[in-house]
Every structure is written in structure tokens, then in C-alpha cells.
Image 1 (cartoon, rainbow, N blue to C red):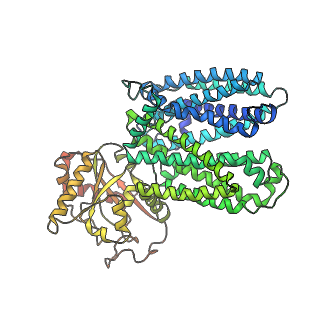
Image 2 (cartoon, one colour):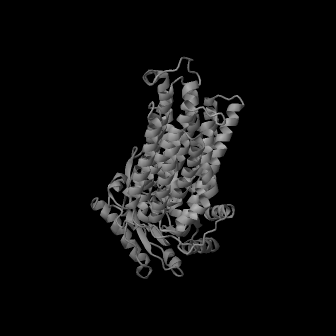
Image 3 (cartoon, rainbow, N blue to C red):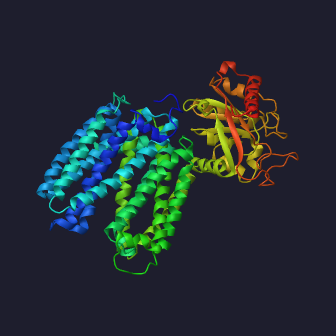
Length: 637
């Protein structure tokens, strides 16, 4: 794992590093080969072969079902193998399997042997099932917390580009008269060999749980994996969110050919263009995550992505429902038709939002689950994904069978997405809180964090900060890669909206001991419980929001917390917030003039090195916070 979070300027620089690049290209070639093989086989069945027991209309469904089946049957076993074995070696074994399967598929293409090719579809599903848990368990072992979002974004972008290129190559190669099957067979074997060569350079990744005893019963192990995932409620509901994303995306991907032909009146090339737009959109959204998240795992993007998925799915219905009938248009005529521009823009933006929705969720699962169980939890996630995709296909088929049009199916899925998203966000309010923090730091303020490397990415710690405004907690939350529990003045909870917000984030109300001794004790009992569980706890030692912009004397609450839990204490200083809308002004009133400092006023947070518990005193902490404020007044140093 990189010890320097600033070792590279952005996620693309990871492609120049051995800890990431060989793995990336191994994943890229594998995803590309899966789709080249499947699409070439589908086109071969549809246009070139006459197979009485596999009509063209059923070929895509059968091939898709065969490929997905191993995810349901074998994900539990593959998750155990990924936790028990060294991951680099396991990747190389999986790539050896891919070469063997592609050699068999080559024979199937050349001999036009459909049963052999169907068997290879299932075996490539096995290959992908084995590789999936390894893929997502590998990244947290080699990337730091500040790299994991960018690394996931690169992998997601690469996967969708590989899917796109694989399908395009498969369709083009198999269509070449006379030589198509041979060329498709050669390309499949070549990609498998390239993937094995890149896997040879993947660095070793120690086994997470080498003493694990493999349970070969897939049913009982699947249930055990689902229980493991459900132990952390945020992780499990994120798994459900990712599975819903695959449900949502599968509806669109499965209906693109018919949508292009029957609704948009485009030919096969127009259908391919829709696939290109969708893949580029997901890849763009995945890459955008690191920039928007400031290289943290920021699940605040998830509600933004969910909102966009619904908005553009609904607009896609309105953009496509009234198109005039016409003959099939070639690619040039299709793109030149202005009535298609809104449809294409909706598809691109919808898929971009899918990328914003999925990447932070994957990163959250990787960073929040126990390392020893990480691959098995990813395997459980793959099982859920497969089940949701199967249900998606059945649901879309039932809706179409009931007489609904394809745009109407898109509308229903978009509206259901809104219901599902609200349900998930109410169950896991951290998503909404992070989204509010994202909006505050990107749309209201220009927020800059200095010294963020001092915020602990693991273990218990106390964060102490000056108290300037009613949104201090939200800004601190935006700067932290981990959830923070806050001890806050009980009077803040009586403020409309703000009180609801702080209750949502499980802030701990505290009253002065002289005013309510029982509430005072309850707050510190709960705070000590937070530290005992290894989490971050924040406290504002001044005891209330400043009335004049100056730092007030620190009280002794921190010392009470440290009595039983001598954890590190991290000083912080919020800067340039005094005089903003959410702070008090000279008359002591806040939130009365929304634009008193205009939009995007610059505010900041400075984080200092942690103090060990033995060095801590209220006076020492006040000096540290005052020093951080003084640094801000001197300059950006």
C-alpha cells in the first residue's frame, strides 16, 4: 500500500505503476474477451447458422443465462478461494483456465459446433466468477484510502471500454465472409494469452485468511456469505444498492437493439452507437468520481447519481415516445436526425450517473468490510448482482408481454429507481448526509482542506475543532474519509431542519453539567462507546458557537473522554467561516442574509498532527487550534 497519498497527481498515473497496471490490463483483456466471444457467438447464431433447437430470438437470452449461472452457483466458493490463496497466483490460474476455454471455443467456432460454444459460455462465466472477488479484494491491498476511489474508477472505466471494444470486435470479425469464425477464434485465444502475460506481472498479494477451511457446499456457503455481508448494515445495503444498479442497467442494455430498431428506426450500427454512448457515459462517470471526491471514498455522489438516473430515464421516455415512423436509418442519417440528439444525450448522461452511483459504493464495500472476509463479501455481492439481473430480464419481459412499449418500460424503471433510492437513503442516512456535505462544499462554498493526511483512516480518535457555524459538523464530515460521530450542544437540535439533520447523523446532544447533569453524563457515556468501537468522535471544546469570531477557552470534556480511552487527539481549525450565512454576525443572528458573502466564498479546514493522549490538555489543544488559525492568516503554507 502506498504510504504517500500524494504519490501521483490523478488516477491515470496508476497505469504507470506495477501495483496497478498489470492488474488493470489483466482485468481489461478478460472483460474484452468475455464480450468478444459472447457477441461473436450471438451474431453467428443469429445470422449465419440455422439451429432448430436454438432460434435466434432466444439465443441472446440463453447465452446470457448460461454466462450468469456460475455467478449464482460458484460465487461463494470463489470468494473463499480469494480469501484463502495469494491473489496474484489465483489470477494466473484463472488466466490459464481462460486460455484452455478459448482454445476449445476456437474449435467450436471453426467447426460451427453450437453445443461446444454453449459449454464455453458457461466456462467463461466460471472464469469471470472466479476473477470477480479477486479483482475487488486486490485493490484495497495495494491502494491507499485516498487512491481507492480513483482505482475503482479506472477499473470501472476500463471494464466498460473493454465491453464496448469486445462487442464491436466480435461483431465485425464474425461478419467477415469466409474467414469470420477463424478470425474470431484467433482473437479470443490471442486476448487470453495477452491476459496471462499481464497476470504474470501482477505483484504478490498475501492471503487475507490463509487458515480458512473451504466449504464446498455452495448453498450453505452462499447463505454464510450473505450473513457476513449483513453484519455491517452499511456494507450490506450498499451491496443491495449495487445490485439495483445492475438491475437498472441490464434493462437498458438488453433493450438497446429493439429500442434502436423499433422506436428510433435505426439499423444495427445505430444500436451499436447506443452501446457506445452507454459505455462511454459509465466510464466518464467512473473517472469523474475521483475528481469530485477529492481522492476520498465519498458516498455523497451516490444520491447525485441516483437522482440523475431517474431524471434522464424519465426524460428518455418523453424524448423517444413521439418519434415519427420511418424506414431504418443508417448511422449517418441516424446521427443527423435532430430528433435523436436528445435521446443520445439522455443515454449518455443517464449512464454517466450510473458511474457516479456505482464507484463510491464499490469503494465503500472494499474499505468498510473486514479484510479477512473481503473477497467473500464481494462474492456475496456478485450473487446478489446475478439474481437482480435475472429478475430484471424477467421483469422487463413481463412488462413488454403486457403490452407496454420500450419507452414505457424505461419510464417505469426510472420511477422505481427513485423509490428504491429514497428507501436505501432513509435506511442508511450516511448517504444523504454525505450528499449534503457534497452540495455544501461544491455548490455553496469553495472548500479547501489542508493537512487531511492527519485524519486517521483507521482506529479510534478524537477530533477537536473550533466552533464557528451551524454547518461545522457537515464540513468536517466532508473532509473525513470515515464517518464521524459528533458531541454537540443540545440547543442546536431544536433548530428546524438542522436538528433533523444532526439527529440523522446520530450526533450526541450534550447539555452543561449545571443545567442537566443526566444529559451531560449520557453524552460522555455514548462518546466513550464510540471510541470503544474504534470510530471517530468529534467535539467542539468551546462549548458553543462563537459570538464574535474569536476562539473561546476550551473546556475539559476531552479529558473526560480520554480517562478510559487514551486515543490520539487531532486538532482542527475551520477558517473563513465567520461572517458567512451559517455563522452568527455582530447581532448574534445567523441564517438571515443568504448572499451576504456571495456564492462560492472560500472556506477551509486545517488539520494538525495528532497528539498522543498523554500530551493532551485543554490549554494545549487550544494553543494547537489557535496556531492552525494563525497559519491561515499568514498564508496558504
